[in-house]
Image (cartoon, rainbow over all chains, first blue to last red; front, side, top):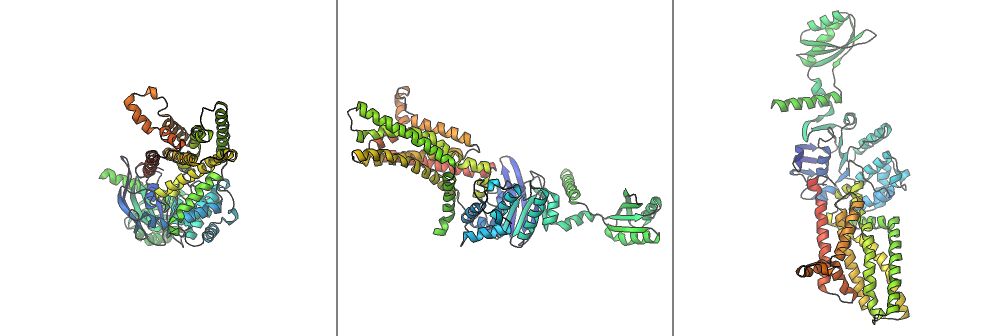
Length: 317
Length: 252
């Protein structure tokens, strides 16, 4: 549905986006994740036709943006990073304007009512936009993006600056929209992608440094063979037993809880395959096993890890 | 056909609404009409008192409307300053740039909306000649030509204002530069003695006053019409280049 091929964007001598390629399949919610300044907004502006790439191409549902920008833009709903609205217009007046500008065919009022309904704006229809709370303004921003029933929704940091409740609201709104359109959203907040996205593209300094499903990415780092073990008993005995288990390389004590439960990180040459053996060792030793599981990294850990590895690869090269 | 220009009409309507629903235009209109009314009164009075040996109904216009242009110059920056600067400041220009609207349509809608403001405000000054006509009917041809001249002059000045507004996010900066530019354009040849002879020919060709003045005498010269149309074209072209600068500046 969205296809980016070797996108590159230079601002003068500064290369903001460097040879970025990715695809988004119909119906997916994909997150563009990266620190501020990693090129997220620039990529989105190329996809929406705000400006053209220095090099490379992008297309929306098979329509090339450079060769037919008007047709491509008709298929895109876009929420810019700085939600830009006309403060002195009413909610419905603004949405009607956007509907007409975006070439909604047939009854504009119907499209406006639908968009307000989906975004929970109906009670605010006649309110002046400048007098709305930030959460409601964000909803107006999303409503204008979906008003022409686009096939593709591009949302640049849709929850930035909202309070926790509004964030939850907007995220569930985005998930609702996923049935209606393909969604590409950007964020620098990690939990956001795990909550809303099915797939994530991680960017740093204008490069794609990783691209996978949220689960697979987490698994990738978990696949280094670390196992989390929670077990209660005498620390030294347990450590000795675990170390003697075949395939165990290294054991690290993560935590000693007051209830006497020991949390261990076990690294093994055999990866996850060591777990059944570990369980047997511990059970045979008579200790109470509370948990044996792959040691999952949080997305924060994952992100830092990927950045570090990318950095090492760069220095190594 | 209708469907093709519907987005353009929607933007034009929004622009018009932006002007006529905001107090600024009414304050601008009030100040404009107060000043131009004062110029009408004083010009008419001067004619009646001193006579100048000229027919009032034929010669009042060129004096009156040169004075009215001074008021036009004062208010033009106030109308055009926000056209792009405010959209850039609010960030809404990013919305416009990502709709199916062409850059030219965006410029045209904004230009026409500004012109509509001036058609209403300057059109109100038709009251003054109408008053005289009631007392003594006269040949309206020079009046028609002076209003055509005003329309062209305002079109040229508005296009300058829109261009300068497209260069900045600050309405104040846009207004100040517009004021400077249109005032200079109008006054370029005001002191003929200060300009060396060879240069004078060029300076008068560039000066808006010299091209407007014949309209006040009832003379419509293609050369003068062309001058104003050329400014509008140049400024429209420049505005579109300025809109395109997002391509390489990466900013709005």
